[in-house]
Length: 409
Image (cartoon, rainbow, N blue to C red; front, side, top):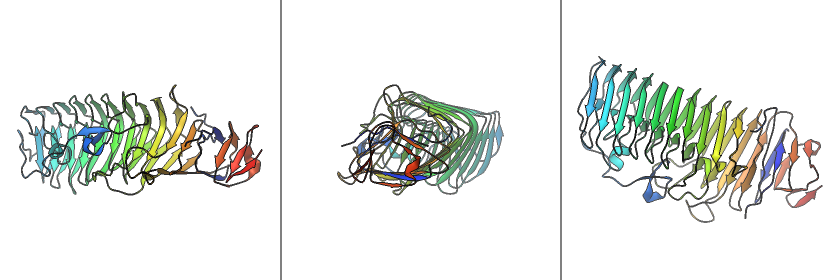
């Protein structure tokens, strides 16, 4: 059972919430899947493929620098541009990819992407337009340990299902600056990673997704986005799977999870979970956000399930959906083993205002840490298992605070 507690937190205190709910507000700032595997019930949808490919097909295997060239592919399971084991710069190009593929070869290894770099390549792209029209046709794909893609001042548009804008897998790196990325299909995050993860750094630009199960960011990697604008039309704004991370610095991000996908049962702006599919490393996940704003147009702000996670917030402006005042829902959902699949959250707030509710169930835990001179104001009866701080900083506001079953009023 989840109980709803409404609290303002403004104190040097630690609050541990068990079988309870709360919302917190602190500081001087007013509160304001893309998954990929239906077989695992992720919030997204691709199906099993044939695994690691033994060979690749490309209309253009590029091994030298080029400028002003048009690259075209119209065949299924074919790259328009393939760079393998080379250091290459492509400038002021156009890349057009039609044709489809399916499953793991495309989503894990880059088959059918418009642009694919692999085998330790370093590929630099600037001033280019990349367009794909087909299923499992990612825009720019960085695959494999030692591979790095650097892309700047470029536009990427994909329209098919399972077709992310920027895609990183297998331990590769991808660095992006001042891009315009839009995706239209289902399970097509604008910034996307998959099996094997990697490191993604994005600075500036706009990133939007329009399909079901298509957040702006789907992370099975370590993804950092700074000074950018991100949005999703019918999906979560951000999904983190497994022991991975998303860091947002001075980002404006909006999500509208109006259509749940896969096994999802909670409408939320940020989903942090472990699907147990094997596509994401297991372990503790991390969500960091400093500055900027987050808007939820539908559902809770955060939902954490079947994973242990740390959420660090510093000076973020939050705007809640009209249909929900829930800031954090930590609870069992459709993934994992019953009784062991709760969400375990450490929430660190610095210079941060929160006005929504925090909910958790009996198999979940939420620990809230606040720094600075703070006050906690209750807006409803509140139930917590532990409290460390000065009760003089708690404004009961006519309500009762229960700490490990003992009432304070």
